[in-house]
Image (cartoon, rainbow, N blue to C red):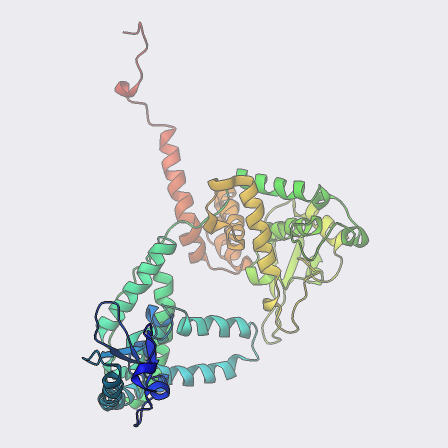
Length: 467
């Protein structure tokens, strides 16, 4: 193409197609006009495998698009700029070869290599175990999650013997900033889980670096705060709201056919039968202190009426080598509810039975998601902004069942009762003490003196005419 044929309003011109300059260079090499200067620039985008920049040149910490490389040609002449652009690229290529060689050397024995070994081996061990898909998804998230995932940290691609204690300090600072921005916490839980995974990878690295002392992590300060739970008044209001939404069907003695004939829609989860199921799930939690994972597995066949208005639940698992865990109720009014439940659901799943459970892996069903959706909706409708949005989930219902039982019967805090109560609810005495009893005791300790300590004379409001 001759000089006269170059368009006057061009912005970029491809060096190979327009100028046909000889040499070894990428097909995307071009010259470019800039708005701030008349001098022309060379511009190209290297192959990702040949790009030594962090994240292969991607913007936004590796989440955005790859950015081009630009160099000034120091000339305003397009033809001269095209020739110089080839030289500029070749000079850059010579420079980055040494950088890539150094990176390759440093990247040997990086956390990425040990992650591949760990994840492959651990997956093979766990793939026949219960909730394997959930473990795989959550474990991979620790490694690959945007921004905070281990693989996105600059030190994760270096040889592990080059990782410093400052790297871990900077990483913990990142985790804490994210936690404070989202939940106001110090991120101790996230720090702990990420530290655990990194340490597993460093254990694999020890054989390759005998005698090397890997840096220690900063201390993780546990930030304990009272878990979210409903008060007794809120609990009563919540159940009343669910009953109303079910058009009072939740408290009626329904035959299986009558239950199945309740209004229901696959496309709209806010339907009458689902509100009955939410009522059933709430009271199963209330009476039997179930875990979230029990909600999508629990079946009518697991319950036994032992007479004297006593019901026990044998929590079975999908693994035959695990013992059945028996749990029972601590409240006398369970039997009225049990009569309702066994009448409408005499067999099969008790919570949202219409939702399909994947064979061998009920955790991948949408039971918990649907329960949380329904619960969030009714809490929002009942309490509005008075109840924190972070507490509108099934964990709050489990906390409520434990907390209100312990408030109503203080004797359960004393051994050996606390041991039996904790075992019944699939938890530990220490967990009950740290999560509930310390706050119940503090509340009670402050309330009792208020009933006996006299009011101060000078805090009384003086009425007109009083002396």
